[in-house]
Amino acid sequence: MTSAWSRSARHDGPPDARDAPDPVARTEVSDRGLPSWLHPVRDAARTVRPDQLSRFLPPENGAGRPSAVLVLFGEGRQGPELLLLERASSLRSHAGQPSFPGGALDPEDGDPQGEGRLRAALREAEEETGLDPSGVQLFAVLPSLYIPVSGFVVTPVLGWWRRPTPVAPVDTAETARVFTVPVSELTDPGNRATAVHPSGHAGPAFLVGPALVWGFTAGVIDRILYYAGWERPWDRDRRVSLDWRA
Image 1 (cartoon, rainbow, N blue to C red):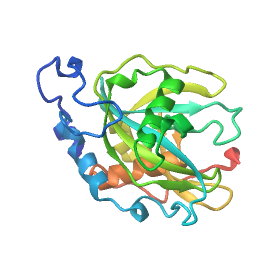
Image 2 (tube, one colour):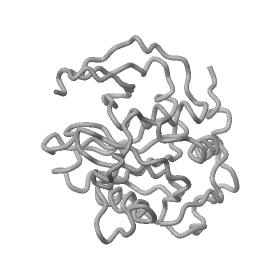
Image 3 (cartoon, one colour):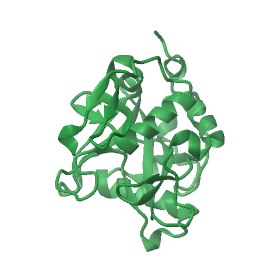
Image 4 (cartoon, one colour):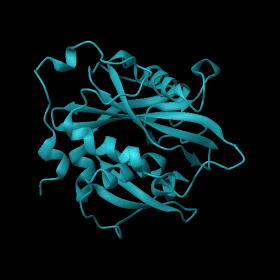
């Protein structure tokens, strides 16, 4: 079965277009020059409501630590792909989990309701993976969501890896590994399951290579695939126990 993204996943423009100067400043959001295969993601981000992404929404009293993650799309040998990392097993929060690059806002990032979220997503991605932020074009921002277990209010910032650079863990005390996952593997029904936590919470999961992607990261990926029209029917009754993660 050929999915919608694979039919349009072609680099638009001349072969050296990704080597051209950045069309916008790195802390701005722009879809200029965005490849056509990312248009469904951009369009979905413009209209999706917070409650369509998660049932865990930021507390109305303003509690929660402002944070941001970089949902970075690139083009690899197998077509469109996402950048992920595996958090070190020694961390206090979300230890050992695959996740998007990201973290809490620092004071120098600025306005947590504005560009501060963009700066934090890029800064954390650089600190964790070593990527060059100047090669990233931010094209959309999703509504902020809440992670109750850690108290983070997280804003997913969507980026296009216009000029990819080598990536690897910068600090192994924080990041165990950095890797990319082809979107084709994320949309493959054989790689999808429902993860069940000992608490009883169940949510989407992806079994890609040696990684089990679950929790907040899997939830965001699941919703992006759905609202972008990339999702393929999969067996939601297929269960993966997270007892060993408790």
